[in-house]
Image (cartoon, rainbow, N blue to C red; front, top):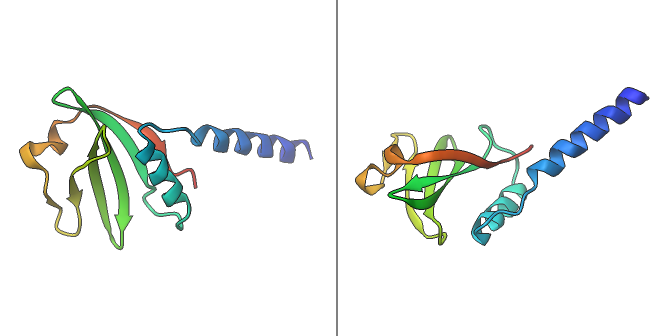
Length: 110
């Protein structure tokens, strides 16, 4: 019984730490949308980083059998995406390859 309670406590703490208030607001809305859909493999995630000294966000998701990374600016404006079966990209100036200080800020906890 003690082990069951310990397990529940650990899982509860881990789940709570994965629910964060993300800024800008569009990121929180993206997370809420993801959580209404079935879990994906690999798990959806959001990273933040910098490109030309501007904060950007990279949202990774799975569409069908393909993995995609969508890049947004700090105003939640779509910049470009990379991925798909052929690895196509519409990112100008090699944005994806020149991201700096990219760090994970959210991952689907399921």
